[in-house]
Length: 227
Ligand SMILES: [Zn+2]
Ligand SMILES: [Zn+2]
Image 1: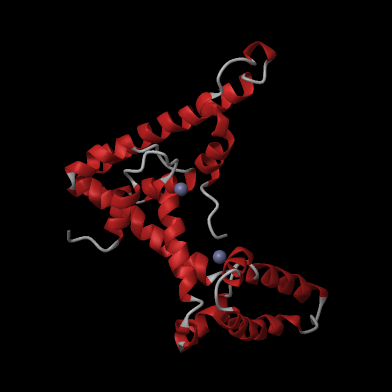
Image 2: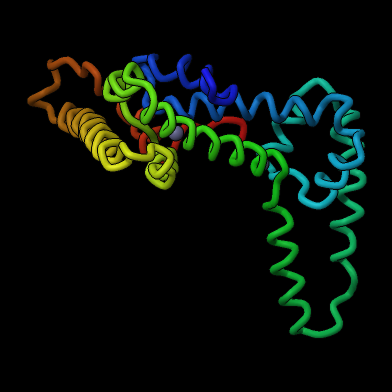
């Protein structure tokens, strides 16, 4: 196929029926691959070091790297990132400049090279899903058989619907119908989870409601990956 490499992960993850969001599964795989890059020799390449110094890692990805194989790799990157952070520790010249500094320090703890790289990849996946929908009849048939997406990834898909070109309106309709149907399915399971706590229902089977809360977590917020 003439699309970029991300097509293969889409065709691997979308047909899995037991999944509330195939794009979260893809994000998990991408995140793992990206994180690994910051633990191998590539971290010593100048432009990678420059980016890590400028953005650093978010707390979740620091923990991901810490759990990895190279404590030294992480430590080396941390030392130079801390030089950048340290520049903000100069005594503020005024109360006003202290407020500016405080906001900057707060922002600096949230920037992350891994988060940014993963989101770049995800934007490409949103576009590729739309391109596949435009070009491949098999994919148009596959899409409604999935269980929809988390809200973040649903938003990413509709934001990039123009990549489905002449089929964009049809694509948006297919996406929204799929999402609504599956959102209501999870909501229905949650409702049964609640109703089952009524003593009159005590003997009835929980069925699909037994894991309704973790599935609602994925549907609303997405799957918790490395972060
Ligand atoms: Zn998702
Ligand atoms: Zn991060």
